[in-house]
Image 1 (tube, helix red, strand yellow):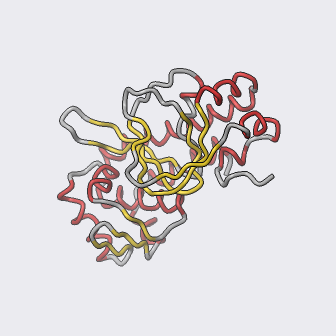
Image 2: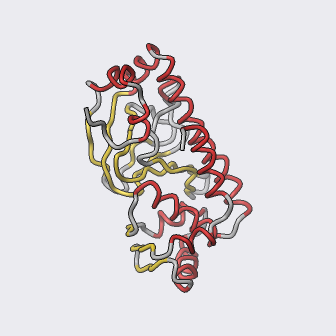
Length: 231
């Protein structure tokens, strides 16, 4: 049986996959779709096959800052399936794609029946938490050019795409900067011939250049995820 191309689903044992297989269905993830808002109850877990989900924190003055991204490497709702389903942040589709979904109650019931499924959910939840921690430090300590390089590399890893449609607002959230500074930051990477940027269209043309420009956080998060989830 061919499973959807999602790292969590692929890692499940045959018995664990059978616990949820009949309850999975596929949905499209249109760009900018809000899957859950802060304080709402998350009702479904999402396992992306394609596309990227952004986890965003809203600040009191209306600013929004991205704290983590989820793609084909993981799922949205790992820790919610273990307990409280109240969303701690907003989840919005950053890059359009598709995902398998399951009602969170069904996933929770399956986790109650299987210690190995619970363990995998915890590990994926910790991997997302590692991103959140690193992003918090990164946004304080590192230059915006390095942060943008880090984010673009991560999106490429999750989507396997060199051409990205990203609004100025999305880019500003990604790097924790004001919208009016996005063009300046993107143009710096364009002048270095690492990307081509034009009105929300980004084409990555030099991955090695982005890796050299990215801060240490890209490699740190990747190492943490590989440790928790297996390389």
